[in-house]
Image (cartoon, rainbow, N blue to C red; front, side):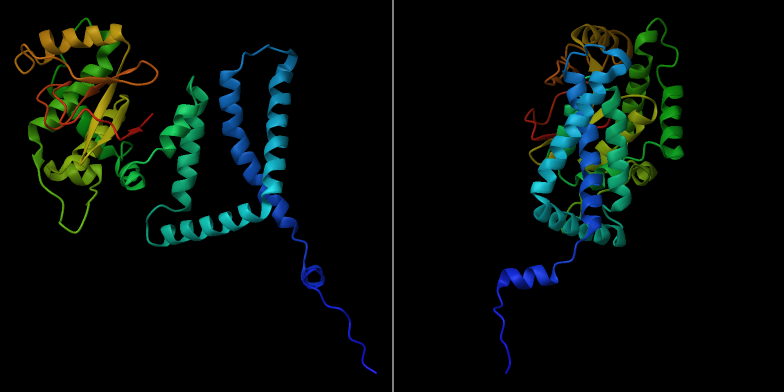
Length: 310
């Protein structure tokens, strides 16, 4: 006589279920990767009571890790599926030479480095998450550490404004204005192919000083950053252009005087400076290819996205 046992879905699941200890490892690693930036944000936004041996910060970090761990374990299945899909996307990106594992590592490393020195670290994460057309390609194209870009920027600083004296606090900005003058004096606007956007690297644009607005922005941002300036790219409807961080209103007054009375006297005669003020009150000056002086008129003042290169 053959005995037929009751077979249920739950029984089958339990029978074939195999414990995977690496699940916990993956969840814990993800927890730490999330907990570190969260801790930096909370640490910067909470008053530090200065406990002995910074025990308050130690307890804070442990508390954050515990909370995130509970959330991740509760959503374990969904998170593991998402991680698997994300790894496949990164593998594909690495194979075709696009955004891959190395890019993720560099982005995370850069984010950690900039967050540690920023009084508003949450802005770094927000900037990383904001939509920006061809964001990863543009970031990769801004080759500010390439010796050719730095040598070009140094050449520009030795060509213009090197004899300006008495403004040591604004030396870097003056040198960035020299880069602006050299690039915009030579820039030749050339449209992309009809098939879609062509993103030229900074070194590629350096060959002929030609390209469209995103190519100009990439070269300008790379050159400015290569000599210590802080650039950002602004995305507006149908256009991308670069800006440079000036600082406060007091800095703007000094820079306004420099531009109109020392550096770009003829170009800026009886004209005003065009700039944006961000959510922290910092002033960013327009460096578009259409401008003959830093702070020239905007093609469009609407901001759809900003990509800051700290």
